[in-house]
Image 1 (tube, rainbow, N blue to C red):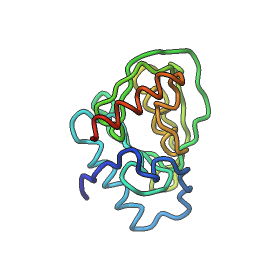
Image 2: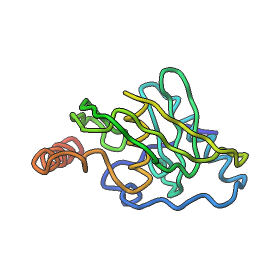
Image 3: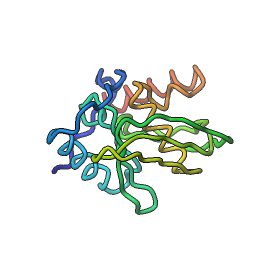
Image 4: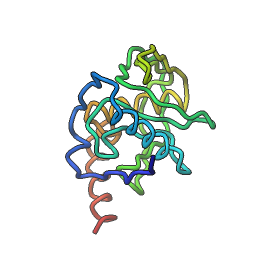
Amino acid sequence: MAIRDIRVVPDPVLRTSCDPITDITPAIRRLVDDLLDTVNDPGRAGVSANQIGVSLRAFSYNIDGTIGYILNPVLEETSGEQYGDEGCLSLPGLWYKTPRADYARVRGVDLDGNEVVLEGSGLMGRMLQHETDHLDGHLYIDRLEKDERRAAMRRMRSLNA
């Protein structure tokens, strides 16, 4: 178990669609332990496996003191609208108002193969969408208007210079 380093843009793993987890192996159990340790670091709402360099469909979350994980999540429902500040550990120092659905529900499994359903509104809804986007190779800045997205990438380059 370990707090793993977060991959940052332009690391190509962040732009790669993650593979489904087909077998629960000791390596998958270690991945979940690392995801849980990594998301438990202060100020983190969610961490996807590709953010720690593993291109598999899994993420952990830490919302309102509830910490958990899900394997092979599929975003199956969204509704409503919210428009608020969003940031990402893989884009350090950037925060932009980002449109999202207010409510989201994902379905996946746990380490024992049991079905898991995560759902919520507000921050929970935003996190579910944000993390499933990561697993599909997308970043939150992809949801920004074209000019704002370009400005975000310029700012990211200047912060890393």
